[in-house]
Length: 68
Figure 1 (cartoon, one colour):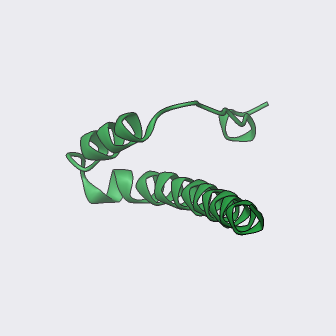
Figure 2 (tube, rainbow, N blue to C red):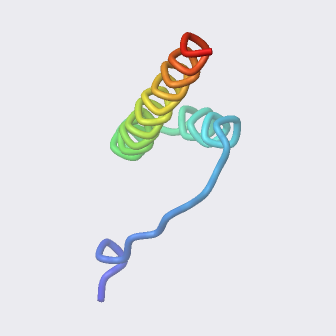
């Protein structure tokens, strides 16, 4: 099995991800561009999902308040 076939999941907070992106930003574009885009894409998807969940919770709480 090759390294590219092994999928690894990391759990990092947003500050840690930003730190990694900042460090990668110091490297040559040709070497880091693809990796930076992969990280940004995955983080963007996760943040969008979190925002949607938060909005749904807020809507639910507003509906409960209206019923009272």
